[in-house]
Length: 237
Image 1 (cartoon, rainbow, N blue to C red):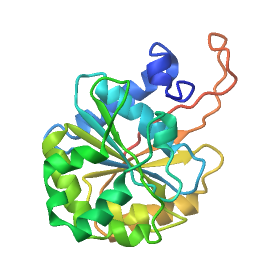
Image 2 (image 1 turned 90 degrees about the vertical axis):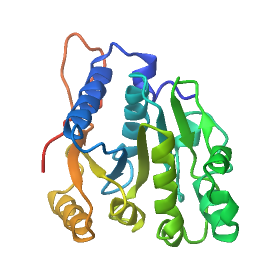
Image 3 (image 1 turned 60 degrees about the vertical axis):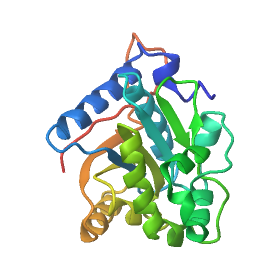
């Protein structure tokens, strides 16, 4: 497990960990009357921190006693298997490919084969699996929506680490079948016009944007030795 990235686990009393708990609380409050379980984390481009946000937010939810599943839906450059130091195979791509050819694999007990238990209590990860030749086509299959419906009966929260929206269509497809989408942006990196295009594209396919996480915000603090730390600020659209 890469504890350097999993700050909520490594240093739960740090200011960053508190920010993740605040984000968790905001999401819980937002979903009080909706019983929503699925959350897509996406971004405009690569290296804006969506995988880091996804993993630490998953830990924050698991620490409340909720059963959490983190799905790595970036079947092109998935990172969750390396972050949690788990086997990358089999994973999401393998499940979707196999379910096309064998309907028996749609059974809930068969889904367990594609999940990994982590060192964090209550937290499971479905890695991205083998790199398929057609990630977008796999995500567009009815089996992806069917998978989410089944794991919703197995878990309290499902967090999906998607792809950057400006590069490929994968996350746009997922945003249409989840209950919440959160966009990660990087301070002084993400362009406003690019963010507006993402919002428009997601809304055009019926996706619900629940908020934005502003990442890589420079912080100056005498009490905190690092010059910069990642922070998150959820804002209503």
